[in-house]
Image 1 (cartoon, rainbow, N blue to C red):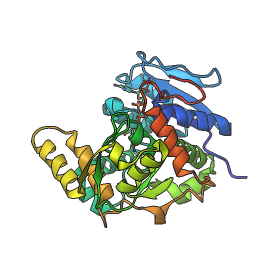
Image 2: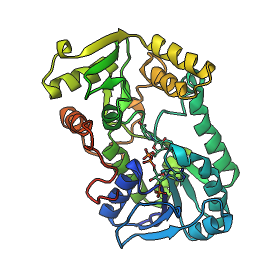
Image 3: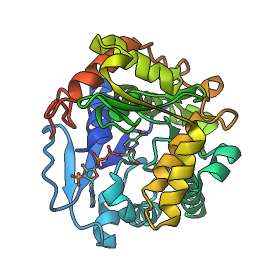
Length: 316
Ligand SMILES: NC(=O)c1ccc[n+]([C@@H]2O[C@H](COP(=O)([O-])OP(=O)(O)OC[C@H]3O[C@@H](n4cnc5c(N)ncnc54)[C@H](OP(=O)(O)O)[C@@H]3O)[C@@H](O)[C@H]2O)c1
């Protein structure tokens, strides 16, 4: 049987996605998982995990930490993203074969979406940099994480306060649960090196749990909360309004507006937010999920204190 890429370096392993991915990798038990973390990190790891702690500005530390690693999986949170390029350069020097850059969102392979939402271009820039360094990238496409976005109100649906803006003209878009993202990445890394090279090198892994419109997500929340629209403060809006608001913010000096533009692009007809034709779920043997179960867990977690980064490992 062809060999797997055995040595995996994981950065951001104590985070929301990182902890779930670490757990999924450990469950498969096929890899040597090496966590790289910064001195100020408070994350804790099981004893089976090799942890290398050091300064991300120290190129020699990064290169040494990445020696012998087949894959670098970057799951740095937004605040840690400026450090990513140092990891890419060190990975090239250390001879790492593959990098999964921190993205795990909108499809950067889709020209129409990149044009509509320029923030997505940053992912393409990372792919180009990684390739120019002689490493292969795998871009993991997940679109918005349904449970994360419900938990944190990112869909503009605030569960604890029962306030929602519903984008009534929204097109169906792909959306993935955090568990499915982690499971998908761990399953990808269990494929043989030959399969990964042939199917995923300098290419995308497409994952999704459901294809839904924005109003359908709101309806699912109503169902699991046993409420009706009358119990909520609801504003009806359009994807154009969402995108226009995003641009108003960006042009007014608020970069956070870019996220509204990205979400607006996902909800807009014809921009490729529904990538269900491209999915690798079946290829990786990923099971189906039940919408109500996923939404119920997210709604329960939306209560203060109801959500932690780690799942069963209690990493955080
Ligand atoms: N599609 C979606 O809906 C969605 C939602 C959220 C995030 N994402 C993406 O998923 C990826 C991971 O996000 P996440 O939410 O899981 O991350 P997170 O939990 O916020 O952070 C992950 C880890 O990054 C490290 N980190 C955080 N701040 C740092 C800093 N200032 N300097 C250095 N390291 C720092 C920490 O690791 P240590 O403690 O080990 O140092 C932290 O545990 C990102 O690419 C993000 O864009 C996608």
